[in-house]
Image 1 (tube, rainbow, N blue to C red):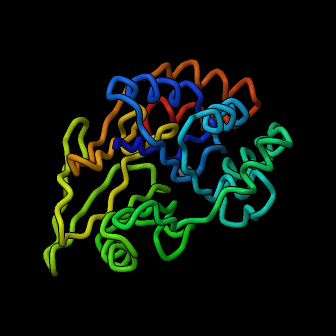
Image 2: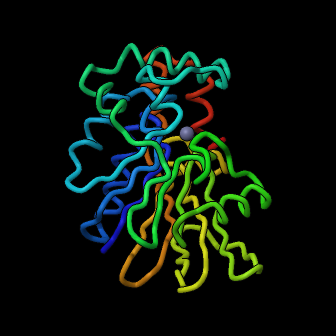
Length: 245
Ligand code: ZN
């Protein structure tokens, strides 16, 4: 079975539709959404409606979802994030707000070998930035393969005994998932990449071939930027999409 791995869509409908079209070439997939469906982008309702309409989707919440639907505070948000949370909350329909409120917190076990989380397996809001964070997280995971988001940058390591290895997350590079080895991976952000590559990022996990592959796909960034401006969101949120930061 294929799993389409989506994280940090951030109300970017143009990026999400480009990703779904690109991924559809590989066939039917169960969809995993690792949180932050909304916030920053101009189309929170369209994104939530589309995610809800997918036939087989498992989603967890992110920190932006929590704040936008009114079950979390914006204390740790910078000004642009705060403004976007307020505008997103105003835009969200009652139905979509309720959907976000109902999303479970990670980590969520998807199978006996796979779990998903937004930030880390031990705290949904923490970030994995460096090797120390990654080692702590990989040892906290309850499953051999742990997928996370939140940092908006592709990253993957494996841990075999005490041997740590960094894995190739460039587009099209497949990571073989081996027995007896632990993996921690972030396939990147659909809607607001921050690794310097403005293309939308997603992953395909093939549970039969036992591979995880990261992909990038170009989308209409200018359209997404126009929607951000039209929604009255901070201009910096539009500009950053153009440079992938
Ligand atoms: Zn995010």
